[in-house]
Length: 547
Ligand code: F6P
Image 1 (spheres, rainbow, N blue to C red):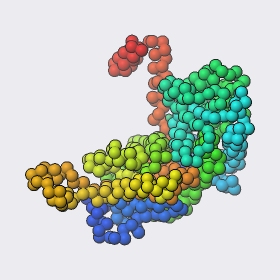
Image 2: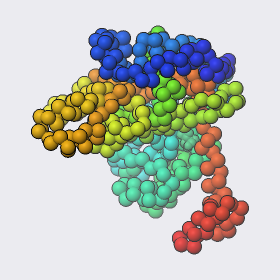
Image 3: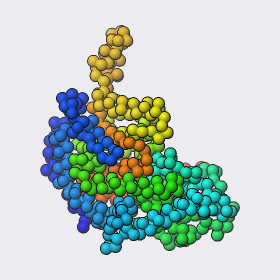
Image 4: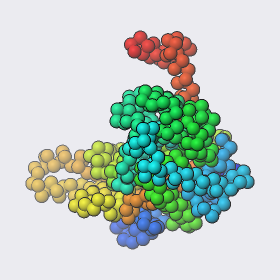
């Protein structure tokens, strides 16, 4: 069944939200906290070892009730069933969207075109387990019989960002293998990696769903050429494996079909780390941790499918984001993990969120008359506090922010962790309350600042506060909790796509640039520039003259 199509702005709930926004746009969160000291009880969700406090938002019970009405009016319940049951919800590519099947229980049945895909999923998982054990135990060796010491993941977009983020995030659980990622077609990237590795002891994992991606193929060719300076063509089979849906192209590249881990067209690139695309994750942290990652996601899937919407983490986060995006006119959202391990979470979710919901045509084929995908950005705290927090606190833009923190540190250094977490709590408190004129003045009085100076300085030292934040507090960063966290954001993306009436699982917008780059490459190679606007032509000629 196809997804329904309905312009959200035509729903009763949307119209009521517009009217409600008029009452709420100047609402003061500090006042709401003052008048309702049990506000936290209304606006928090506990699930497994996750706690989400969303009380520091410009909302009241009516806001949430109207947002939940919007979800219901947009048919979210039925859409969730379609999503998990393998409905063709990626209609423009005529595909199901089933990354959730990759972490489903072995006993589940998920049909695609009348066939249960779970047995295939488990067959590939078993191959990942076997391969991981053979590499990490030293059973499989390189062409000179030496153990593998390094893994190079060659891929881009969804074939790079997920594994790179997860390997970084789970560094604490890592084994002896050194893991590298090559993605950019910039030759300097691949050459810097080559500098660090030894052909005898390095395994290359070429990841490309389509196996047609220019960056990945170019980097793989360069690496193969470099490898063949020390080894023979036959040795390629020992050192190169691939993850792809395109077995023919992989074979043409020279990789033995036995060394190919398949994936399926019903797994989108940006949601693929749960498939064999996660092979590098399994190699880096061991298969048991990889399975834990899947288990965490699977548990979040169950929560998303079964929890009432008002206690459903992905639904509530998605609705709050819509509240700011579509009613307050907020354009971006910040994601601030208070752990250095999650430094790649924002770039990873940039693809997930912006490639999915950066759409302007509704499911009815008409240009939308409302805002869709938010801009997502962020960096770990406390570093980000010393970089861009000034703008969040005192700038002119409204930037709803998610703060992600952990109760327990991994290395057990409580002095550091308590300092880190005191900043975590202080920031959301500061963003909520700000600092009033009276507070600033009383500080000046205590310092004995002279009246003239105080008068001048006062407006610069006032913080308006009233800046919305969600606090996501998790027990500990483990493979399992990471899986749940990623799945939380995956489902948030889904909910928003449903409510915005867009197709979240295609990415036609990235194609045009790729096509034009091919034409331009031909012109650069032949040094014949033709048929461009005067700016592009001028730039190309300037480049050719000077390179
Ligand atoms: O940038 C577009 C895109 O198609 C992404 O969606 C995808 O993750 C990436 O390119 C890589 O594609 P592939 O895995 O086919 O090489």
